[in-house]
Image (cartoon, helix red, strand yellow):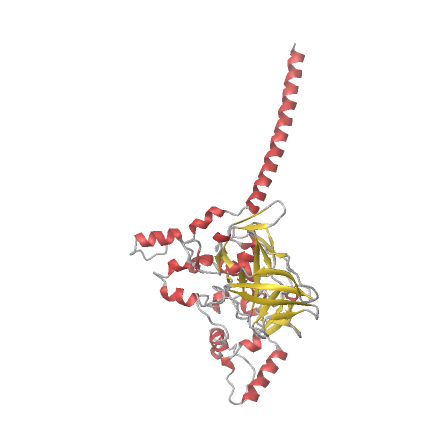
Length: 415
């Protein structure tokens, strides 16, 4: 009898162990499925926590009025006559691939289209839906197919005042089928609710998209902030909002690196990172961080800056040392140079050692010598008759002899 009871206990123990293993595996699988679900369905309920940057104007009028003029604020928009920079006039509205294929930019009433023609016959027509890019240097365009976004084949390059082949697209055929993922919208917008279906297609809630990088992209969703300070107008401390002054240098750098550190491998879903978080918990670099030779001037300002001697030897330098994100300061080398002078001056014995020609003031432009515009290895723009690499100002502060000699030579000619 004792042996029988012992046998029964052993059987129960075995069954218990089996059930425990099954439960554990099921729990793990469920947990992984939950994570996958979170990745595919970013918290759409968060949309209600955004108040919109217009709500900031009541208390921060001066900052609001300058910020809405910045490239960040205009980095995406609904397509309109105002937001599209390219021309739709006859003679200026076509991009030719060859004598058989071309795309025409056409305006019909208040709508805009890219129409592909093959041997003069319409092949495909899609409507401009979203503009990506402020128009300072260039723009590309997206169209809606249901709730999916796709890139249009023709972009616009502002310096050449020319329509061009969308970067990365084939130069020998018209292509409408590049899907746009949520990561693209994350860096060119403030918020979007989306989900990924079983076919890995990204479906956006069009009404949830907050275009442009506005106040709430950096300071956080502000509905609670607005509500609190509306009810407590005498309160001077900013409540329920992110204050960059209270963050560490790395936290501030991570906020910019989210979109200015090149392509990254996602660890957590787009729109889950908030300013103040550790970026490496959300995405990892897709390049060799030990070598600056991997860094291209396009899209990785963070990597270039942090590889600079200026940054390495400074305890406090960050992006805001040079950039005031609340103001439009593009094409103002003299202004940026005054910020260089905060550290590089004769009193500190680290001023520029170049002997200038008579009448030249080197302090008016440190930028074109030490942060020159260089050709991107990643972005090549094909215009109708010629092609060119996109020129991007490098953020690796260093001595560039060839570019410095060219800059000085131009200054001498002007004199």
